[in-house]
View (cartoon, rainbow, N blue to C red):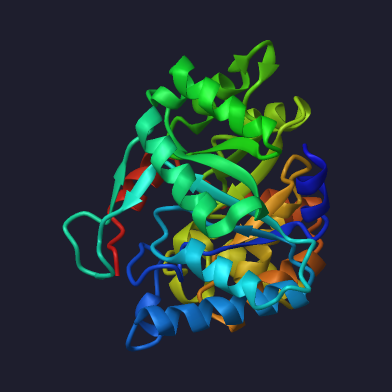
Length: 324
């Protein structure tokens, strides 16, 4: 892990901007979480509130992406007005293009493209907004069939970025995340590993990448966890099924919230360097940050394994979540 990411992982929780960079996303509860009018100005104000709160609580990693609507611009403008902040680690992603034109209801919200031409276009766009404040640049949502794992011309381009001081990484998605991670660990340029970071979906429902993430960590890669609350399924207001009783009971035992317990269970994994909060409100973020003070005992961690779903079922459920 790079020194910058190691410094950012001290808090163990980072802030992701996927929920507030655009009016539509798949996280549950957005109708009540976001302003009634989701104008760019309203969501920028919300993003600023979240980043101010996160930074004041010791969060030093912020995650964004080209496809998160105006999230990169919101982040850049926030940094421009807070010149005293020098210790923040910024990660962004390329590989999806935002196509919804600031609409909640759109036929297509984002288009995936891991080609060299897409990389060149998007890295220039990211640099135009974030400049030399970019610390980590990841290929967005890599699956085993992605050219990001096999295109040597793309690898050369990414390796050039790493010579400029930017860590190259990838995020994963889908039921075969473990295969993607292990394939990424073998990619080299000039005899050196290309990918210095993996960002993966892991939560109490979807644990299939656990062994591969431990391998990545042991090999010196930074590990960032996304969707640790399963797009809102592991928050108290959406725990509708009986198998979620374990989460409710442990929240009562520890005197905290269901989301804090769910995040604490991920933080407890020794290979998890940074666990992202995808909060859309300051109250949600404050509740998420309480996870750093929740210490689950072995019996509680074992009880929470009752929530695990088959990976295929988890991703099939996620694919049905509506953009709202």
